[in-house]
Amino acid sequence: MPKTLICGLGSKLQGDDGLGPYVIEELEKRDTPKGAELADFGISGFKCALNLANYERVIFVDAISLPGHAPGTLHRLRIPREKLGGLPTLGEVGISMHETDLPRILATAAVLGTAPAEIIIIGAQPADTSVRFGLSPKVAEAVPEIIRLVEAELASPDSQNAHD
Image 1 (tube, helix red, strand yellow):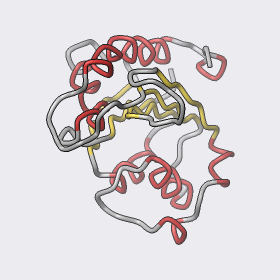
Image 2 (image 1 turned 180 degrees about the vertical axis):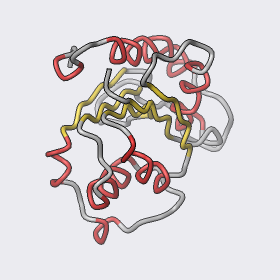
Image 3 (image 1 turned 90 degrees about the horizontal axis):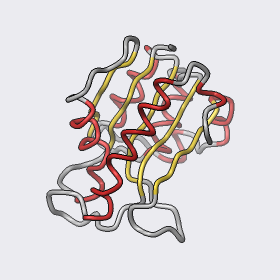
Image 4 (image 1 turned 30 degrees about the vertical axis):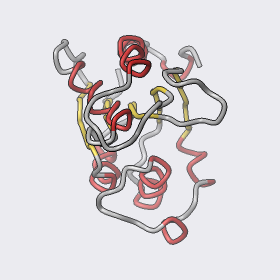
């Protein structure tokens, strides 16, 4: 298995935005396969981008808001490192030590040369990202399936060809 980082992103102070950290907490209760590491980067996007250099693959777990999807809808995206060149440059998006906007993290990693070869994003459509603790019922219901998707990626000997 390639050296893999499972990276939770988001703020637990903003409802469903805390999906990534909540999933990492659940994964910490299970056996992590050799070669895989768990990390809750919360809202430390720049720190996350710097740490990607140590891995061949990253699985981001985050709330993913895509137009036209109901709350709790699962999303799984794969971004080849070669495609990162199409993201905005750091000068265009700015940089903050405390933002977890995934496009900024990926743009930062591309500029710094820390982006791993394989980038997978798994998450769910948020329902409520207002200031509050806890996930909404629909997003909380999606957590077991998100964990299953992460575990399937880790178990796949050739995740490049895993179910997209």
